[in-house]
Amino acid sequence: MWKQKNREPAWVAITELPHAEFKPAFGAEKQALERFFSPDIVVDLAERLYLGERFLDMYRVRGYDDSNGWLVKWLHPERYHESAKSYCLIQWLIKQDILTPEPAFEPRRVGAVKHVWDQGVLWAVRYHIHRFLRPDPEDLFALGRLLAKFHNALQRHPDRIHWKKETQQRIFCLSRVRTALANGDWTCKVKNRDVREIAEDSTLDFERLDLPRQPLHGDANLTNFLMTNRGLMVIDFEDVHHSFLPLEFELAYALERLVMVHPLPDQVMIQLGSALLRGYFNSATTTRSINSEDWVPVIKSLNLRSLCVLALIENQGGHVPQGEWNKFHYLFRRADIQAGIWRSLRL
Image (cartoon, rainbow, N blue to C red; front, side, top):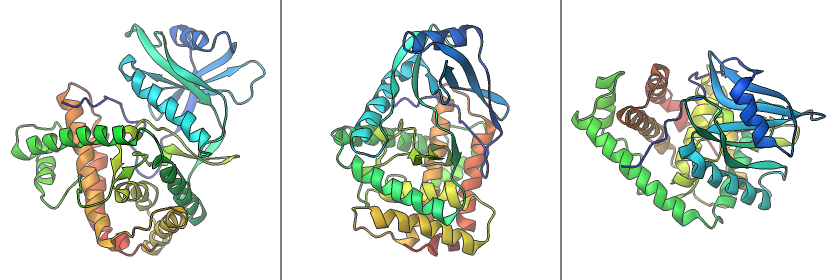
């Protein structure tokens, strides 16, 4: 069966991120970071990201006479190849003028950052002062344009056939999970009856073989788009290699996470969502149109897919915070409540 990497969510909130700050890293953590950057950079300051009420495996490191520093990601050893593919994609996107050329440190195995593991994988990119996107027409229009430019480039990537195969494997696995949930062969620790009813709903379909497919980002949420002094940046490409899917999936997910979650008047959400779509189709090479009746079943199907991922993690022995289950149940119900808004979006 396809292996779901057990990544704890970076955030469980819906409308806003928890408070984030960097706190000093000491001992084995700092030593591993120093070895990673040696001999290129002598580490002056090493800090670990603290989000909400827990530490994440993200670090900010500065060398002497280095004002911006580096953003460092720590990964379990089994994710080395995943991170290496992301690094290679970044280098390719730079050549396509999607990302700005800048220094980066290739993923490599180093000594333990956590005492419980013998080794880990670290990789680093330049840290940028940034803000997240606001529920503002200008920001959403810029996001639509960036997504279109990103998609246009991915259509030319030499690995897209391989991405298609990885996507098929993943969807096949998650479809089996859905069947097990619907039949009662698998149970969930949280809201099991609700999950089973959702899995049984024949109107939901996260395959959508009737729609054209293309390479997508795969995780178009709030934290993966940063507004910097260089303009809008897209980050975190680890899901690209299994996201050869209908365009509707990417746009619906972005609309949900950057527009529909906000407690705003209906007309304002229609304005914001339409700005994102106009930005996209003004810059996209595709001539496809989107059926407005598709939005609600698509986003509900994507939330079903997410519930299947959580169930798979649990079945493979991983831990899923209750907040993650609650988040996707909330989003699933909200789609029906906002059906009129979804149908009113205009390109």
